[in-house]
Image (cartoon, rainbow, N blue to C red; front, top):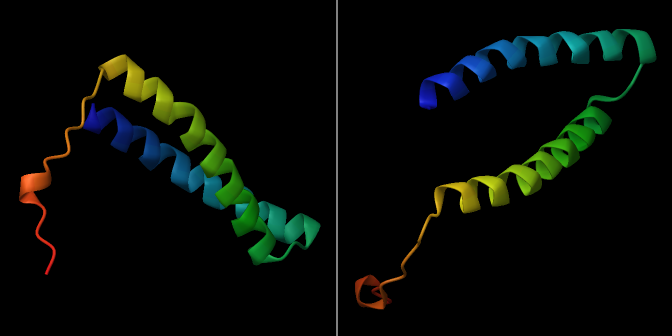
Length: 71
């Protein structure tokens, strides 16, 4: 599973950098605008993928209050 995720990331990051460079050159956009748009896109993707993975793997997170130490 991790290998497939690493493979996808290794292929998409160079493509993303190429597209961003092309956008900067052709459209004369500010880097801050691109970072904002990128953050919104990644948030949307996470909001879609997280429930799918949560329910498909049936994860159960248990909070054990005895292990929490507050000083």
